[in-house]
Length: 276
Figure (cartoon, rainbow, N blue to C red):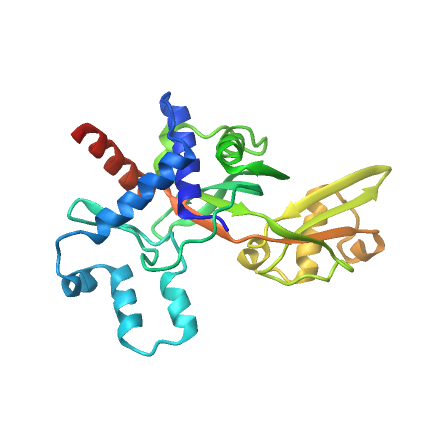
């Protein structure tokens, strides 16, 4: 399962590259984030007052003082992309600080996606997405693919330093690879797809991560048709079933983080270093 720390690490890798400085290691990011969380929890403010002012803590307080449904409890603590609010100089993360940490993953297939946020509603525009289906050690893999997807995705120009404030990064660690019995043997929102097929004497292939189809509002058939187009198929859309498709389904939960939230954490890290 991808984590906030994985997202921080990708942003740190890209920011350090563009700022021409040495990046923190994944271990350093993870340790620093734990200290950051602890500092937020130790803020010398009355909990009730904090609950009034901070949406994340207000939701946590509500869930602990009333019989919330399982769905609402999950919704209140599921997203790390809710803004981090500053309190006593320390931003309070929107993730539940009392939740059990996810199990540590040493290596995994992975994808790193960059989006540009624009407008008042924070509309998302894809800025780069590259990954690997081969397991990589996360310290090396996340850093490498963070830079590759930001700078070498041929669909886009390389991300520049001036773009950092508008960026969001998303990390997906891939698991549970299975051969699908047929092109429809998968679930929307649960499975990502990797397809391959022969067309005009060449083998073609493409993938969509689990979140793509729900975000686009596609049906399963629309997802398969679009994925085939992505792979290079130019036949009639209503004839896609004539192609002998090999479909591999997989799972992976995406975690995302905006640069603004990374910057709050990074500023805290720098301030601590200066105080030492």
